[in-house]
Length: 99
Image 1 (cartoon, rainbow, N blue to C red):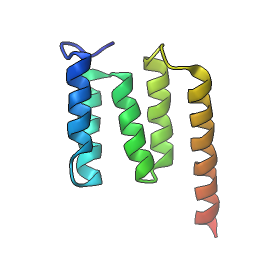
Image 2: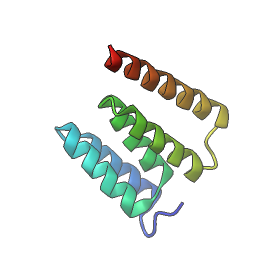
Image 3: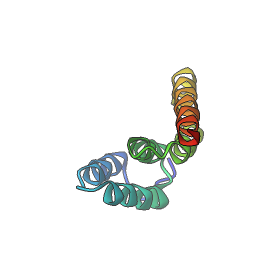
Image 4: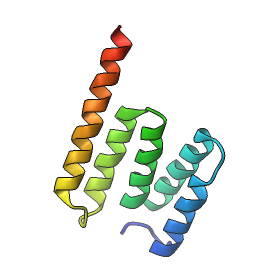
């Protein structure tokens, strides 16, 4: 798992605490610190979701890819679809920015 002394239960509890913070900056910072501490794939996934919510699609895609590398139990087809969706959204946003 790569999470040192933190158990799966405590990691999930900390993710929930991060997600309850009031601002996007606080949630992102909390999740980034948790990932740096644990290097856990599920934390990378939670961070990717937060970044996606903030429309930081390129960063989110990188986190989804980290999660994919870290977690062997991820169903590859489902993740591939998510990555393709993120790429499509990112490309659409770039098109809008050019207008």
